[in-house]
Length: 472
Image (cartoon, rainbow, N blue to C red; front, side):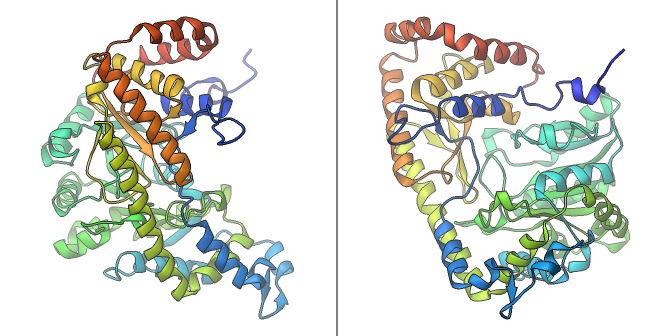
């Protein structure tokens, strides 16, 4: 007799992905400039730590907010008592204003169409529950955020069908790629309910252009499916071209209202990336579909945003002078940090895909592979973790169809730590080039001497990769 449910005992969470396994190795041996200078540097975490001083300065100047006071009087009791799942009207009003500000006020948002929840992870999962039945499918362009295999599939039973994009056109979405993915889903007897995109892209760090958005809109109209636009990096756009929200694209296309397309477009947003507050767990769904809003609001009971968090952030976002300063300065710092990483990689002979947003670069290490295979990518990834001491995310974990690409984060560490990481990459690239891409004698010795300590890590990875779909 089974004592646990299948959900509890199965391994479909995705925790055995190389994306998560790299994190585990980092946690065993984290880098510290003094206490552990030879440790692993975390470059697999898309976290924005570059502008905390701006947030802390605002908090220091608004101590009443931290003290849970309004006009000098405590609101502790008001915040501590039960709140329903609709959220504070003041907070929702400030959120839609902030979202419009990030989009240059080209679009406006109605707070009544916004549903609060604990982070974008919850938002994406709830949309799956609202839009699809178990066994139905969403199409996602590759490469995509590795956590989607958990967020979209694990509890919902929804399937992901990749839209294979290529480096030949900078991994842009094409009409033919959309149609090919749709036909592949049909051959698998999967009902396609929609397409989910991240814009700006995670892991590419680039914004979608008008052609891509128009392909997406035309496809949704033709196939009568939903579009989910995950726009959690919309405030990180630090270079041209500017960000175009799916809402703006639909408005400019003058879509016939008879198509009911607006009811099938849903936006996911959070404050984790743009304000660098992932620990506050503030996410949201924005939808014109009244049924989706009503259902998502009920489901949000399982992951609400705390009252004190809503109180603090509604006050912060209401300070328009502060938000304007923050957005501009944060984007400037992100660009400077990204340029620093790109320059360092270039000096090591390593290129990056062109990017203008996000907290990471999509790095091309194909020339460091011993062969054009995912097995070779896995080997290179292991070497980078254990020999170089960097945790980066391999393209295979993002379902990239081409081996040799890696997501490398740059905003979750100090500038000095990034310099250390760049020096390590330069030394590794130089030694690899000298050895003509082959493992030299010293590498073989290091592998032999460390084989015993690595075995517990290597074998689970190998068993997982051996069962990857052939088209990856």
